[in-house]
Length: 296
Image 1 (spheres, one colour):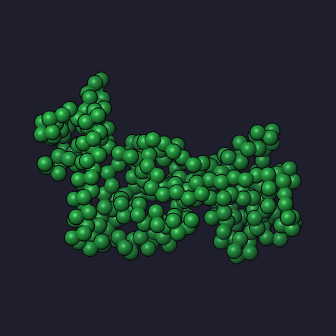
Image 2 (cartoon, rainbow, N blue to C red; image 1 turned 120 degrees about the vertical axis):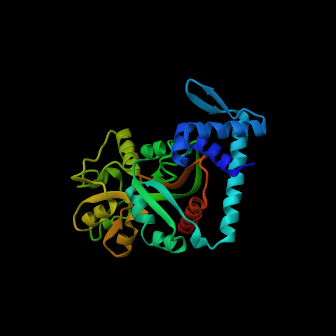
Image 3 (cartoon, helix red, strand yellow; image 1 turned 45 degrees about the vertical axis):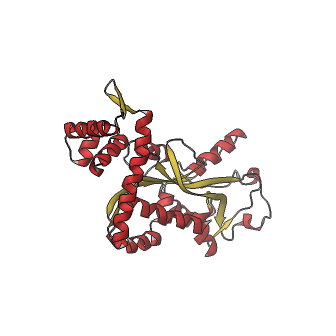
């Protein structure tokens, strides 16, 4: 069985069409069609149902796709085993929030790049829905989400970690002395908030259920900048602990014990279930899976 034909078949599945697969692989549409017919003849099955200019995998096609990925992955692993890890190369595209980017693509990425200098990354900052759209269209290889716990049948969770979220204020703020606080006690304080992050949406929904709302004096997209601003003022903010950790440890911020507002979000590394994992992609998944496990 020709591995190039299997690659073409997988590409047709991942890019949802013969033309798109051909563009990706540098083949004409007729070449792609010919290779698919060759594979169908060899296996004596129909791989796709074709109707209204669309293709859908048959039951047999889905089975072949699973094994084709296994064959190609085994072949790639063999090539990697025969050569040094620093020869793993490839271009990868990730989508994530700015919070995830600042968290995992600083010192961590430098460690990863030292091990795999031939892997090149493009990172796009996006909201969760846009990330999902990119995954479905194969415009991103992986996404890092920071949101409520997500389960989608089309996506596979490669790694995940629960994150706690707290109200914070500058160290020395009068509220720091309180052993417990309620939302009612802080709702009228001046606030600086993120614009549309998942934890902000969760908080707004919780407040709306109580017929309350926070009207911030300023909204920023960069949570690290928000920490710096709050540490120099009397404003409060609401952020995941991993964002505020360094500021708390350095004595610049304090977490407030608001007992009637328990919020958590999840860091999740997601991939489309139909995505073929190249050695470069698997190396990135393995690296950040270990990183999240260390955090947990």
